[in-house]
Image 1 (tube, rainbow, N blue to C red):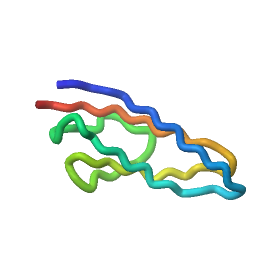
Image 2 (image 1 turned 60 degrees about the vertical axis):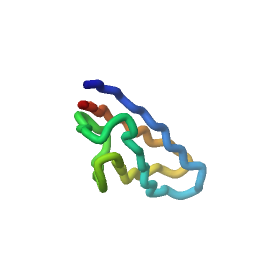
Image 3 (image 1 turned 90 degrees about the vertical axis):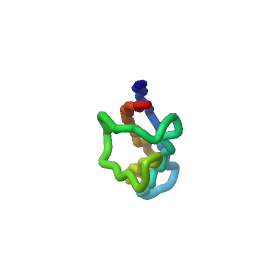
Image 4 (image 1 turned 135 degrees about the vertical axis):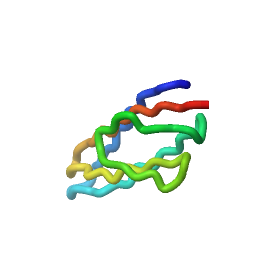
Length: 71
């Protein structure tokens, strides 16, 4: 098994807030589990995780998650 933590910085340079869908591919293995996440998420399939994120105007949002892979 293997665990890793991912941190993504999403920036918005617009004058208004933006909703962004952050889509990540869990490419290491299909047997995976999200252990911790800074935002709510959905898993549309075994290798994809999606985080809907609100990014403030002229600001930044940070998405962090920890995943465990088993093989």
